[in-house]
Image (cartoon, rainbow, N blue to C red):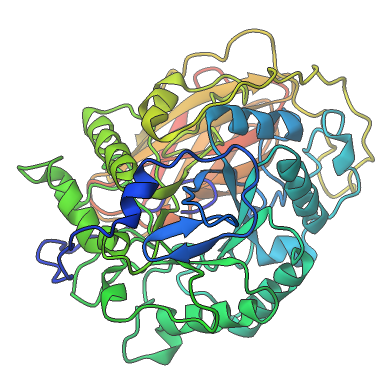
Length: 533
């Protein structure tokens, strides 16, 4: 999944995958299904058949939440413009998670800068920190709470995801070298339990295949072995691919049917965990969501694509991303089935996401970064283990003092200060212009100095490019955007073009994208114009 939104892919077929049928579960799975996970740190983990085990050789279920941002151009976990890092970690712990999956980009940890939008009053320990030092601090504070960390190489550059584990700017050698550096840095830190080698291989990526440059299985093996030369105690987490060897297509990173015939074998055994991603119809209308036997068909799909791996005792499975706004009946059915599946099989997981600014799924918090999304936590209740902790105590920050920006850029504005009033209910503003793509602009939240708005776009036909312009007489600059790039900001309007997963749109596709704007106040009923080719 991208940093801000989940993925959108094309599914050709999934029925008749030809994967080995699940056999009778090994007896060890019975242990896991009944396992009570300690809220304390687990020490180094290893695997035994389809089970993850802790340092005491007891069954262990990873219950993780994703907290993204360190992979984006901000190079810092999102939300720290509002809340204290300590409060966010405590809230994750209190919800019943024992681990955080922490996405990062190679660019951030090697040459990135922490966003100046960070609220340094609430987080004074982040002042003058590099993104790598922010990661250090994040891990140290997690350790103090008994939370484990999975490092997820989410992007090579901070700009966007990549199909393959390398790009022209970031080679395979760089990818492996950076992993080895992180392995050395945290060699004596059992809080860092695993490395998720590359987020969501897709497109040209294959599990094996005839082209070595696209062979994700071979690359994961090389990287895993390299990491083990530095720290053999880490879990090596390997995601799937989009296009499987049986001619079926599924979610980015979601296809692991080929593991049956071609597992990843490392120098040090019993350290591999396979990690699919899975999403509901609101993210992309995969064919199985419209099947007559939906949602009963989901279990068979999951069994065929990745569930068989733990059921047959090949290796454990960690569902590395899943999430939804839970606004539709179909999504609620999917969530109920998946939670039941995870609970029944004792499967580890990482929910996407803690952040509320994941535009296709939302998060575990409302847009104020404090109020829990109770409906989601209720849906997740069968697989969580909540604990009681003191409530967050982030004070309202005063206006911070900042060093003036270069004259070629807009002058900086104070860090956003949440208002005491609840966020306004979004009122969509429909766009005009193109009939190929329609758009609705809606305000999500605002504060003294800025706001966040979402734009829901829907394609009536296939389009190769599209753009949206909305009027805003108060705009100063764009602080952040997801699913689009804002190419023009004047004193009266903002123009953005689709990028990343929404650069081109397929007929019937709907996507929700958004942006954070520095402005004296949000526009009222802006005029929205859409163009498309």
